[in-house]
Structure formats: structure tokens, C-alpha cells
Image (tube, rainbow, N blue to C red; front, top):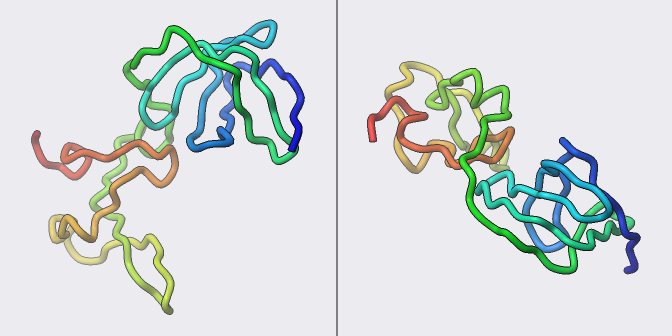
Length: 131
């Protein structure tokens, strides 16, 4: 599959051909600063190519480093109580559900591990526990 050279648009999230989603922080002339939306790994991507399916790759990257993620998610930003969400099996398929009863009754194996909107890994703090 062949692709075309692009300059990603600032503020847009792109799916990498390999794995992961990357937010374009800023860009010009085909060289852009991208950030992995899950980990915060930030780098300059040189020679970005976009394929017909919308995925992207780049020739090489430089200046890679971790940055503190700014919350950009309506659930995370609003302080959503993730104790309300559980993973359950309904009609033979796995799905997210809302917990009935008290929000303190949940097991670690039933709780959601990643925000369903932005993909951020949830911590004990998201479930009302002090770290």
C-alpha cells in the first residue's frame, strides 16, 4: 500500500500504522511534533506519510521525551467516578456496564482499567483510593 506525504494538522489525532494514536501538537513542512495519547511520549516526526486507510507512519523521529499529559477527555477532565463502570458479559459478549448498588462494591478484576474515551490508564485515585 502506498501513501502520500502530508503535514498533519495541529490538534488532530492520527492512528499509527503500527499501533497507537498520536496527537499533532504542531507542524510545518512535513515535520511535526506528535504525542502518544496514551503514554505522553512526545517527539518530532520527520517525513510523515498517510495511507488510504487514514493511518500514518514517519521516516524517523528525534527529540523523544515524556511529557505530562494534559487531560483532554470529558470523562477524565470532569472527574468522572469510574467506580460506576464495570466490565460484564451480556448475551455472550463483553461490554461496559453501569454498576448498581453502592459504588464501593467492586473487585479489581471487574473494574475498567482504561478510560473508555481517551484511553488513559486509570489509577487507584480514579476509584477513590489513595496511592
